[in-house]
Image (cartoon, rainbow over the protein chains, first blue to last red):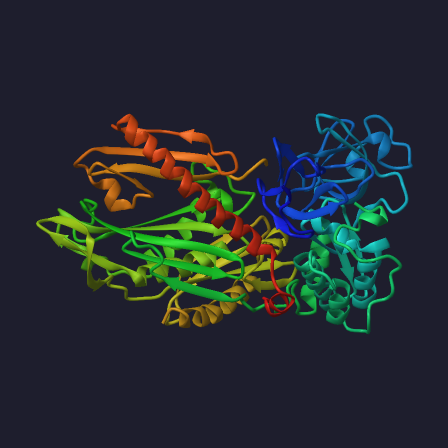
Length: 245
Length: 257
Length: 99
């Protein structure tokens, strides 16, 4: 009876995590009879009596409040449909598109065209996974020149870092502008291709080593320019304490 | 294609550096592995960067075409496997897969790289039929060049099966190779803005205005060409692209020798 | 996903029950022939796919399913290892593994 794995072990779907009734299955795990098993490929965390999983793989599932980068894939009568790197697409309706007034029957391509990338915020996700987004809000805008890469959505919290500390360090030390969408799309713009390349390589490195300790110092070393700046709370995998998801 | 992203890439190309740090004329790392299939008479796996294709060559005995009674037959097919890209779906061959097969076929056929007369067994009745099958495993751009390189490597790898009492015994291979006379190599050059690049990644392929695949032989002669893409190219463009292509194909050919 | 799925084919060759037949064994036509693909959920032992071509006795079928269960547990160990190996690496290995 008891726990069968160690904290921060990597487990696969179906793997036995604990036996007996002492533990409670939390996010990413399930109980079957006397056993608690894993539902996903991820990192086990034991939090008191709760056993939960931080997923290592899997596509983005839209959540209200997330800031994402979407690509316009269709223009409908009253809005734009966006592809958001998820099994589900999102709708941006005319009323949420801009602080300007858009008349009925206006040419919507004046605002956002096919293939445009935009930074938007998810305002609603229905039970049937219909997603609504808005462009009204600070920092929400159409993206212009730059490069777009796709990262593992589960690594986004690590790429952003506590209070944005990781991505800030990358931005400052590579002299680039970076916007990280919760859905795994990342926009990068630098003054020259070399600095963009360094930023992208660094992000890929963070992605690869996200689950290992001491990452911030290794990234600081990789970028050069001295030790990483101090962050107040302890580093951890998902940034659970900093409100980022 | 997204104008903002495209103009950004074109600006970078103007400085001579591409998104992954390469120069405009650099290929990614290329690996060629022969003999990867035990059931095909010849096979090869080619990787260019993350793009990966597998080519298998099967031999069978068939009736020759009536207008070419003393010549063997060569056929090239391409399957763009759905797992190699979110853009590919299973089903009948798409226009793109047919184009890849045709361009690769043209290079092999027009250069007379296989001596088809030597594939004749009994004129008018029996000739060797050489089927080249190209399968994509991963598409990160430049499948055309990977297919051409893979087809040649697989043809080089072929050992003819034994023929006993007019039946092919596929379980036993002889030491006889295919009569290969030339090594035609296809190099695709893309025009992005006013710049020319070779070996595009799929990110770069999306930004290209037009592309020109040129297949050339050892002596520098061209044996096949194929233009693709929506935009037009000028005669000067063609000259530049041909120059670049012949230069790079000599480098690629060394990988097969 | 509540678990992964492992699958293997059992078959009869010359009256013997075998697991994971190769090409020669599958092609062998004398002495009783059966081809039984089975997919199993390793944690519960439940069968999610079962097909049979050929002729087989009840006893041999029981034997085959028992052998399949052992095989699937083995395959599942390999599946688990392959998935985990992708993510577990020493700090040194990760640093040295630059493309």
